[in-house]
Amino acid sequence: MTAPTFEGILNAANLLSAKLPRTPAWSYPLLDERAGRRVIVKHENVQPTGAFKVRGGLTLLAGLSAEQRAAGLVTVSTGNHAQSLAYASRAASVAATIVMPATTPEFKADAVRALGASVALVGASMNDAATYAASLAEQSGAYFVNPGNEAGIVHGHGTVYLELLTQYPEIDTLYVPVGSGSGAAGAVLVRDAISPSTRVVGVQAAGAPAAYRSWKSGELVTADADTLAAGLATGVGFATPQAILRDGLDDFLLVSEAELRDAIATMAHDAHTLCEGAGAAGLAGILQDRDRGVVRGARAGASGAGAPSTPGVAAFACTGGNAGSAELLALAKLDLAA
Ligand SMILES: Cc1ncc(COP(=O)(O)O)c(C=O)c1O
Image (cartoon, rainbow, N blue to C red):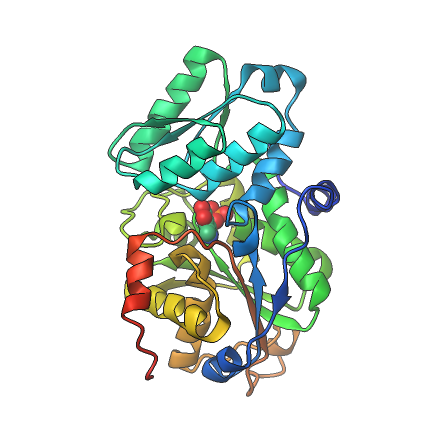
């Protein structure tokens, strides 16, 4: 496994600038008011696949050799990584087989098929599906794309945060949703290189805490994955991102299902945006900090100079808008009285 680097993110940004438009990032007055500070939202939900993962897929495909392309690829995913690789494979004329757990909602499988990839619905869980996908790749000679441990994918995902921190150097806390951790690892590499005073705070669902527990313990652990936020529901820690997150994350928050639903509803109400659970997770972290009275401030000011008294500028990426029925139900229960 090659370790991801900031240089790799710069190269990915160069590559992607010819393939994807730059996504918008701005603030909403109602959201700022509710959060009690300025919040910058980067809209990855407007990507052609509805999620930031398309950046990782396109970057990974560009790095494959001619032999690897000819052999095709196999991967495992419940949704956005699947669409990302299907999209990028179609663009590069590479055959792709996506293994999805048998429990995957039909509309997610349909979205992948519509992008031209083959779908195999196998296994009761992501872990079962991943075992099957690895064996399928071994038998067929196809390249197995590990959804969390590919440097190319971290590089592609890191470009979200390169754009965000370049456009808004005033951001002092960046809240990043964590599933495998590839996006958060990219955010840490960018922060270290261009904005060292920015805090990077990971956010995962309390019902799917594998990355969180791996980060806490310093070991790769497995955990249940029971959350409406499919993008955060990885049942295992991944070595490549965890190696970067270990010292790079300033903090790691777990958010409840109620907090995720509230963040989804808030994005619809205040920011005219449909987020899936994982896409709203960054905001769930911001609102949790507000509720707990946590004031973070910039990194440099926090050491020695005492704790900051006013919250600074927060940011998160709405990483995806592919909402399923549980996320849409959160809108039906819209209650923002608090
Ligand atoms: C919308 C969305 N946000 C966040 C994540 C988490 O990203 P990562 O696996 O890079 O931690 C995912 C993962 O699939 C996702 O689909």
